[in-house]
Length: 312
Image (cartoon, rainbow, N blue to C red; front, side):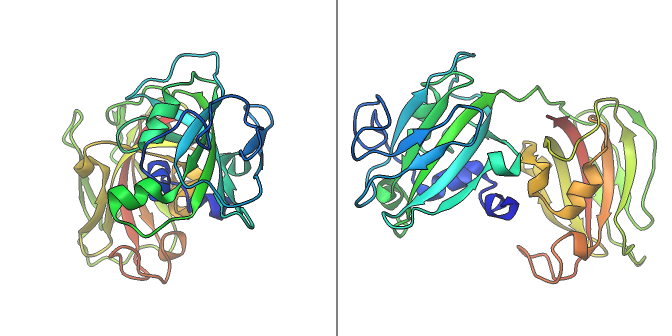
């Protein structure tokens, strides 16, 4: 089940892949009242637990829409907010209506930004609820075809529970510089909020085991296995100094459930205090293994320098 949800890990991307268009007041083009009317998707169960979704007979909806099922009682969600959500996803094809995954099963809520990267229907839906609310969203192929020129996508149904807001994250690692290092790898700390410099061009052979060294020792709570982590990072390939990814280059930290990333990150970051900067050497069996991945050659040893900015 974790793998099923991991395929949906980038929440704005999965919303975008399904549809990116306008909304109605109800989940199937009807008024946003009870969700059990004939011809409508029916959602039962309490907010805070995995919902039960029942589909009507016949063909799926062809127009994207949302419906507020539970308004919530906490702070109002506003455009620009970052929110923690639990989501449950189905494909609605009028036949099998296959279950795609739920963060209630993986125990790894997602953090998303309510911004223009989300489909309009989700932007509107989220701003109609408060923390503790539940939104039903139907993502049909209409907007995806009109706005992105894509082939028709299966209609998807999302039940999204707004858990709350993530805690404020640090801007950079904060703590005592302890200077631990990995032989063959160099990390230069410029200070302040500037990105560290990572150098991995070396003739030294990488360890076949995971190696984690602390560059700056943070003083926050230790990262736990089931948490969502906010981090800045740069990733390079051992021996080549080739950078394949960097949140610093992108201009903002990444946020992810620790359970949804490679094993090297899961094992390497668990137990690291928030505020720390660590450098990790990840062997292939804890990285991408024998498969080429986004320009990373098969059987590569990966090296990351990571600032742990928040965990919740």
